[in-house]
Length: 320
Image 1 (cartoon, rainbow, N blue to C red):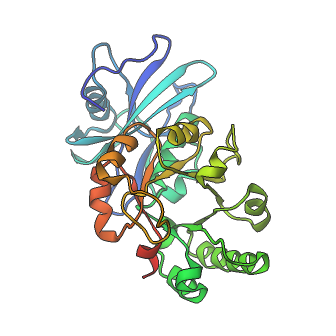
Image 2 (image 1 turned 60 degrees about the vertical axis):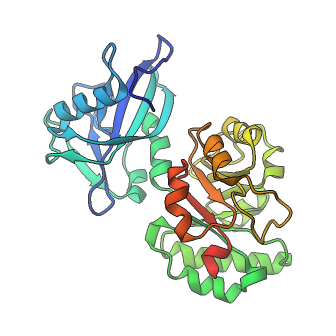
């Protein structure tokens, strides 16, 4: 997001919102006061842009007025459009990476710091909910490969996933139906007790029947859908390789996409890698969170994030 006044439709209200985190990874939310129509609901702090203000300037002003802090550096997170009963809002969300002062409710509003996993438990303004989805996404998206690494090895390693930040895709093509069901149920058991989410690279009926947290749509399955295949709180993800598939993913309102392969990979030996330059170009075409895939290892995470990724998706890098 450039430091310029956003160009939006005149009937929409432009709002800047800030994501502040503390040393424990918790996020700051503020409660609407009695003077507001949406009293008692929670939101990420911020406010309306004034005429000729940039998003950054509006956020700096609003957070100084509301929280008594001086904002330093920010980085764009996403833009959300939401229609309330009485207003249409375009919400420009920035992650606040540095600030001075201790946040306090300067306008009498209540504040609280919550872990991303707990944001679903409060009465959050509807327009703020897409932000929660992004905040709950970890930097690593792990994809199973029992045919290469063995079921026992994967299940043992799942026990070391750090808390609610775990995100797993079960992608198994060689297991029998019964073996697949048993493997998924064991993965779900181990992940649920640690708060990790499990998506299945399978049909919608299988996802619902086995009680998974969502579906990962391979590119070929992505083309079969003209709307979001599962409602919230299910997660919906998709594999994309080009702009057309990204647009399709946007159209059916997936939560995030996996883009690649960036480098050559053993799991897709016949796929030509797109490279980091093309990845950067494609990732910047969308507001959806993007994971880089294709030969990824932990060492690739900084480079992926510099190229616009939320994180990296790994098969070999997860279990080797």
